[in-house]
Image 1 (cartoon, rainbow, N blue to C red):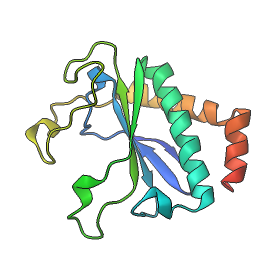
Image 2: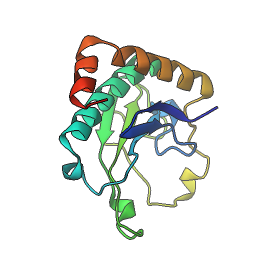
Image 3: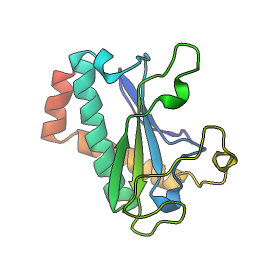
Length: 156
C-alpha cells in the first residue's frame, strides 16, 4: 500500500516507514512540498493557503482516526543543513497519545540525533488500515465548505 495519504499540485502527505514518533505514542505524518523550497517564506500565497489548509485537515483527521490527545505541528529542517541544497521545507505531524511509551506526556517531543539506531525500525509506523482511514477522512474534511473555499484561494 502507498504510504501517501494526500496529494495535490503543491504538496504530498506521507506516513514514513521509519517514523520519528512511534504509532504507540500517537503517530507521525510529513507534509512535503512537491517542488522543494527552503522556507515557508518562499511559498507563493496560493501555496501558503494550501499549506495551512492541508495542515488543518490532516491534524483533524489524526485526532479523529488515531484517537490522539494532542497534535504537534513542527516545521523542522536542521538535519538538512549539510545536505546538497540545504534544508527543504516540510511539516511534521506528531500525534500525542494520552499514554506515552517513548515520549513524556506534556513535554516537547524528544528526538534522538539524526541516524540514531532508534530510527532503524524500532518505532512503529502507522499501519495500512489506519492509513486508508486517514486518507478517506482527509478527503471528506477537504470537501467541507471552509476547506473548499481555501482550495479555491489556492487555485486548486
